[in-house]
Image 1 (cartoon, rainbow, N blue to C red):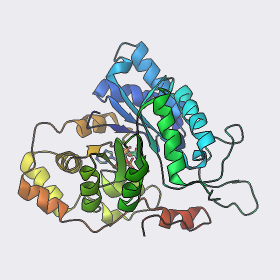
Image 2 (tube, rainbow, N blue to C red; image 1 turned 90 degrees about the vertical axis):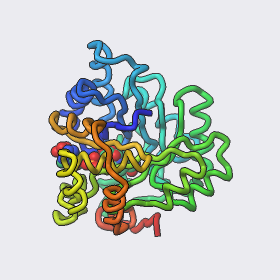
Image 3 (tube, helix red, strand yellow; image 1 turned 180 degrees about the horizontal axis):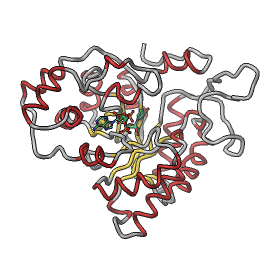
Length: 314
Ligand code: NAP
C-alpha cells in the first residue's frame, strides 16, 4: 500500500470527482474512502475519469473503503460491500475496513444511504440504535468477502488493544490493517506496538490533528499542531511546512498517512516529503507533545450529536 494516501472524508459531493482527478494528477495512488463519507459515487466518477483519461490504470491504484455500522450483521456485509463497489465503479477493493467497533440497527439502502448514526432522523426524538451483533460475526463475513474475491485485504478501524487481541484469537484471515487516529497529541504508542507485534500495518487518520475538527466544533483553535513549537522548529530547520513535518513524523514512526485536502497546492505540499528526514531528537521532541487528546471520540460525539452515550475507548 502506498504510504501516503488521500483522505476523502468531508469532501463535498460536488467537488469530489474533480478533487480525485486532481489528486491523481498530483501523484496520489492510494485513496481512503468510506460509505459514510457520502461521496463514494462521486469518488468513483473521479477514478473512472482518471483511468479513462489515461492518467493511471486500476492496477496503479490502492482503494480502501469501510463497512458502515448499520451493516455489521453477517447477512448485510456483502450487500454493503457490493454497494460500495458499484458506487466506486470497481470490481474489487484493495482494502475493506470495519469503520467502527459499533454495531447499529440495519437501515435498508433504499430507505436512506448512507444511513449515518441516527436510526430515523425524522422521528420526533431521533436516537442511535445499537444492534446486538458481536464483532466476530462481522469479521467472519468480512473474511467471506476475501474468499469471494470482492476485496483483497480486510482490516479494522478504531479498535483498541483489547479488541485487537480478541480479534487475533479468532481471525481466520488476519487483519492487514488497523486504521486509527494518530498525530503528536495522540501518539498511541502502546497500540502501535501491539499492532506491530501481530504484524498488522497501521494507518494514521487525521494526521494533521485538530485541523479536521475545527469545522465540526470538535477542536479549539489553540489545539492546532501547526503552531506547536517542536513542529515549527523542525519545519524551519528543514525548510518545510508544519504540515509536511507532521506527515513525515507519521511516516517515520511507521504509519501510513492519509491527509485530506480540497486545495491543489496542499495536495502537492502534503506529498512532497521525500527530500528530508527528521532526526531522532526532532522525532522525540514532537512525540513528547502527546497529551492523549482524541478529537474523534464516539464517547463524546454520540452524546453531543446523536442522543446517545456510546464510549468505546474508556
Ligand atoms: P487531516 O487530513 O489530518 O486534516 C484535514 C484538514 O486539514 C482539512 O481541514 C484540510 O483543509 C486541512 N489541511 C490539509 N492539508 C493541509 C496543509 N498542508 N496545511 C494546512 N491545513 C491542511 O484530517 P482528516 O480528514 O480527519 O483525516 C484524513 C483522512 O482519514 C480522512 O479524510 C478520512 O479518509 C480518514 N479518516 C478515517 C476515520 C476513521 O474512523 N477510520 C476518521 C477520520 C478520518 P482543506 O481541505 O481546506 O485543505
